[in-house]
Structures are given as C-alpha cells and as structure tokens.
Image (cartoon, rainbow, N blue to C red; front, side, top):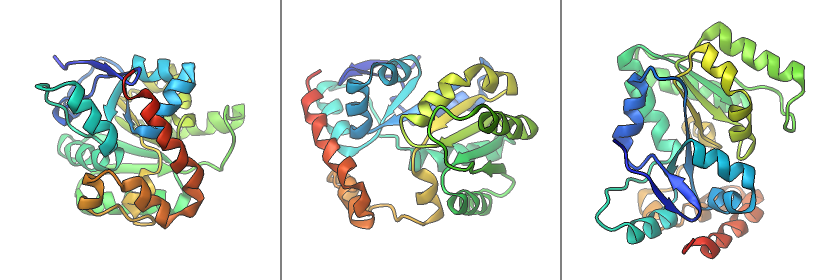
Length: 242
C-alpha cells in the first residue's frame, strides 16, 4: 500500500515510481496523476478547485527544491522525485512491454508529432498516437471538446498524457473523467510542457543543474517569456511549513 503525506497543503500519494508503474496493470478504473512542482504548489494554495483536484487524485513530487523540503519533513520515508519529463519514458517503456496503447494529447503540433516518433524509436512495438488541438481558452467550446473525445474513443488508449498546461489540463481531465473512464483509459497524466522536452524543442537541464534546484532558471534562459512564471515560484517559500 502506497503511503500518503501532506505537505504545502497538498496530499502526495505517488511517492515511488514503482507504485505509479504498477497502475498500468490495474483494472480498477481511471487513475489521474499530476507531477507537482513549486509553481503548482503555489497554484494549489491560491486556487481551491485546483487543490481539491490534486488531493483527490495522485500527486507526485517534482522540482528539486520542493523535493528537498519534503524529504527533510519526512525523514525515514522513502520518497522519489518523479517529473513528467522522466515519467513519460518510464511509462512508455512498460506500456510497450505490456502492449498497451498510449496517446499524447496537446502540446505544440510539431512537438506532439516528434514526441510520438521519438518514443516509437526508443520503444519498438509501442502503440502510440496523438493529437494537438487548436488553441482555445478553457472551458473548451462543445464542438472542440467533442472532437477530442471522438479521436480518443476511436484510438481507445490505455494511457493518456495531457499537455494543456496547468490548471487547464487538470480541469479538463476532471471535467471529462466519466468519458475517459468509458473509453477505458487506465492512466491520465498531466504533463505540462513535457512534449517539447521529449521532442528536443526545449533542452532538459543538465543533471547537476537539476540537482541544485536551478532547472527553472535553465528553462528561463531558454525561454525568457517564462519570467513571470519564474517569479511566481518564489511564492512557494510561503507554504514550506504548511
């Protein structure tokens, strides 16, 4: 049984990668996973609906600084840092072994297609498809949403990666939960900008940068438009002892 811990006003249920991967073999309905970094911790503390969705589902700890404080506050408990950009490779590896179908929803059209191609090359036999809908503010127009669900129904994936960005992706999964369960999806994972990293459109920070907690600085260097989001991350320290 996976342990749960509450820190920063967020309940973390996905503490180990093995537990997340074991859900691929579960047939007990839909499991929803969100890797939670400092930015999402701030959002959860400022937005009640978003916090309720995270606490209802399975949140993993992402980001070196939140991971550092979580380990300090929970000494003796085995906790692993699980980011969307790592998890997508682990899940696709196991999905290829189990002959499960994977679908990439969202992201830029180019990064979605390149990500599919790269994952096929890395994991021969992986059954994968994807769709990048035209940008629309949330909630989506009815016709827009129905097209997404129709495409998913036709492919009938076991695993769905949703890259609309937070909180849009989490709201969309929650609002369409019944439809996703009827399609037969086992795992829905909210992964933000992961497809851009998988496709190589954005470069992942070197390991030593990740370990010292400066991955957000690295991403800011690559994309200065992230400056406001970068500044918001500092608000995380307000919730360190929550």
